[in-house]
Image (tube, rainbow, N blue to C red; front, side, top):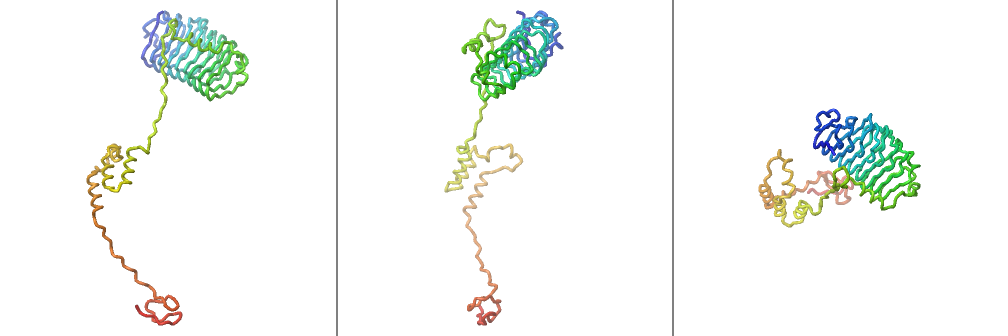
Length: 357
């Protein structure tokens, strides 16, 4: 199989840069993009022999199809690719059967699907935050849509989808699924699975869907995924090993056991504040030794000079000034207790003779 591999390139523009490709598009049967970014790919009649498209490890990709003649396209495989916009998909695709997304994020079907499109299966595996069919879409041969193992925050609105043969809709191990509407598909579904999906938001008659008779046995879903996996040797796509997504962890600071707080408690509880203060200032984790970049404009701090000043303050004798009593402003009569001026010789109330003090 003749393959055209485009690897580690930015701003890939097809068909604008089709003349710069290493191989002729007419003879290429497999187009592969690996680790590319900010690319815009439009597949046209020039790719007359193209059967497979493989996109792995790319970011910010726009993909569209515009065929006037029948295309030979059979399968499309995306893996570990983020921020994908699927634009218009028009033409005749009589051999197109399967479209699979593996460990992708933020995939959006923004364009219009028109023409004789024979796509039968649309699969998302470990692909969160995906939205499909945001514009009128005609897929007369589509019979299965699956969201498996980690398709969290999926938003599904099938109001604009025309798929008279769609019979199977499966969800498994995917949380925060938002089913806005199933449109006309709700009445024709024959197999609906919703397994181990936490915190769903369902704007549909879930009780009716739960009673649907499944077409397959419960264990057939697992076997089907393993058989159809692109990791099989017979698959035209490369083996892809899913990497676990890193979990977001936060470390909380233990204030009680923080070195600065321990030294501070020792300083406050010690009988000798001079010694504890010296230990605190000499500690490598002391707040006085941290954030040196923020103290460049401040004068240099000398712990020894500070300790000498502290010792002098503790050893110096305390000097207290004598207290001087205030001079009285009035004279009180010992007989009746009336208030009289200091120079009065007799009480103004009772006439008692006052003594001069």
